[in-house]
Length: 210
Image (cartoon, rainbow, N blue to C red; front, side, top):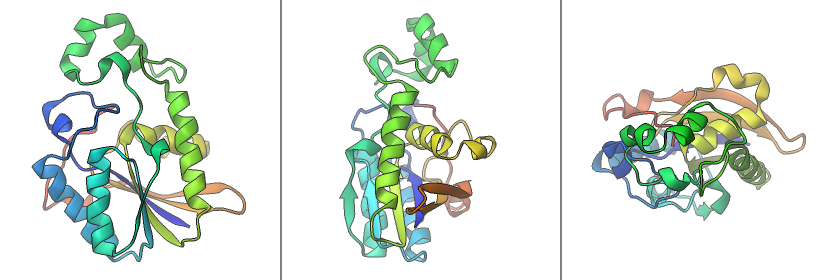
């Protein structure tokens, strides 16, 4: 199966520089335009299904893609973003001053460090890889997966450790990363990463870590 993995368009929290985690925030006006650009690009790919996180910013992006492709949407809870615990809803610029120790440990990249009240990157990778493997086993040739930046980054790294040098620390909003999955062997191959050509006429936003 070919999987077109799309980070959701810019959300209202992205535009404010605020940590999202699992807070259920909508797309911004720019995010809606980015989602429409993704939908137009994927319409030509012949996708047969869209799998999405239930969080509103992802689901709104998925609705645009599914409408353009005229295909069904399936919601998968395990595609949710990392739970960012005490960081959720906070402005990024305030984190270091408010929680210096926790912030230092988070940016250190320890896979097993969980923000208080939240998840670790390893926990996120476990459910993210499980979701992508389940999707790859479904009876489709081409599908879109609409989810979140941190989930995709840690899941891609876990599924394809030999490709770690190609996987960025963060993904652009509404970027497309294309994978080829072999359901028989369970192997994944990275075909392209963090593509944003379709956004040139719309506008890019940030690559936030949460």
